[in-house]
Amino acid sequence: MISSTVLQSIADIWQLSSKQIKIQQNADTLTITLPFPLFNQETEYQAQVQSILQQHQINIQNIRFDSQIQTHQVKAGIKTLSGVKNVIAIASGKGGVGKSTVTAMLAMALAQSEAKVGVLDADLYGPSQGIMFGIENTQPKERNQQFIPIEKYGIQLMSMDFLVPKGQALVWRGPLISRGLQQLFSQTAWQDIDYLLVDMPPGTGDIQLTITQIMPLTAAVIVTTPQDIALADAQKAIDMFQKTQIPILGLLENMAIYQCPCCGHQEAIFGDHGGQSMAAQYNIPLMGQFPLMKSIREITDQGQLQDLPDNIAHLYQQSAQKITQALAKLGKDYSRVFPQMVVEKK
Image (cartoon, rainbow, N blue to C red; front, side, top):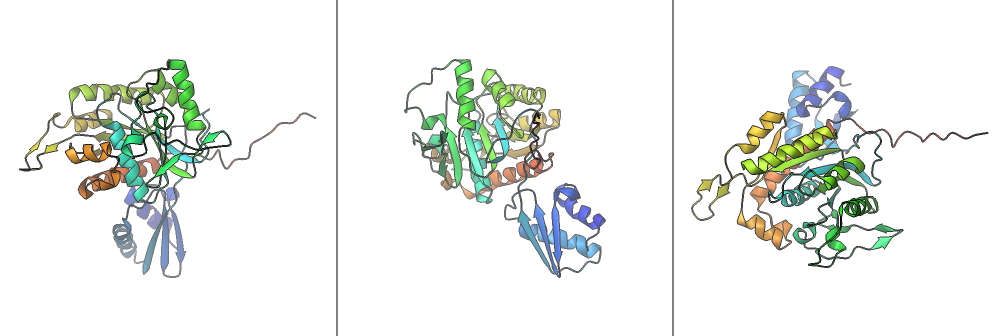
C-alpha cells in the first residue's frame, strides 16, 4: 500500500493536498484520479510519479490517470446552479481588451481537454459569443419553460444574441436587465457542465454587482492588456471581486506583443510588463500572455474558432490548465450530498 507520506509527495506535484486526489492500487497498476482535466499530460505525469515511487523503492509498472471534476463552494446563501459544477467569471472591468475572445478560446481549450464546458454571454448590451462561434441569431429551443443551450464544438452556449434580432438594440434599464440576466442563466437547461465560463460585461456597476450577488460564481479570472488605462480598470474589477468575496484565480494579459508576419519584428504596442506588475502587486498569478494577431481577429469575426493557429491554441491550453488546477485547490461544495431537512408540525 502507498503510505501517506508517498501519497502527499505525489499530490505535491500539482501543489494539492493528498485529500484532493484519489489513488487506487491494483497489483502492479496505480490509478490516480485528479480533480482537473489532464490536457494530454499523462506521459509527463507518469514520469514524475514514477520518479517519486523509485525514490521510495516502490516498484509499480503501470501508472494510469483519470479526471474527476469536483463542484466547489460558492458564497453562503447562494444556491448552486443545476447542471453546472463550477461557474467562472471572465472579467476585465473595461471593454476593448479582448475579454470575449479570451473567453471563447479558453472554452475551446477546455472542450479539447474533454471537459464539459458552457459559455454564458452575460454582456447583454453587446453580446459577441454568437458571432465568434458562428451561430449568431440561432434560435434556441425551449422545453419545460427552459432554453436549450446552443451547442458548437461540444460547448453549450447561451446569449442574448440568440433572442434579439440582428442589429436591434436592447433598450432596457438596470432593473429589467438584471432580471433578464437572471432568467438567462437560471432558465437555461445546462447539461452536466464542469466549467461554465461567464463572459462578463465591462465595468463594475449594477449589472456586474448583480452577477456577483445572485449568480453562484465559484471564482473569477481577470483579463487585461499591458496598457495603463486597461490596468486601471482591471484593478477596479479585482477590487470588486475582493469586496464581494469571489476568489480570483489569476490574471490573463491579452495583446501582450505584436509580431510582424513579414519580418518577425516584435513590438509591445500596449506597453511592457503591465500584467506582470499587476500580478505582483495583488499577489495574483499571471496565467497567460497572448499576442495581438490579425489571424485571431479574422477567425473570431468569421466564427471559425477551430482554425486558431496551433501555437496560439497551445498558449490557451496552458492557461486553461493553470486555471483548472488553481480552481481544484478551492474548497469543495458538499451541499448537494446533504439531505434537505424538513421540519413538520404534528
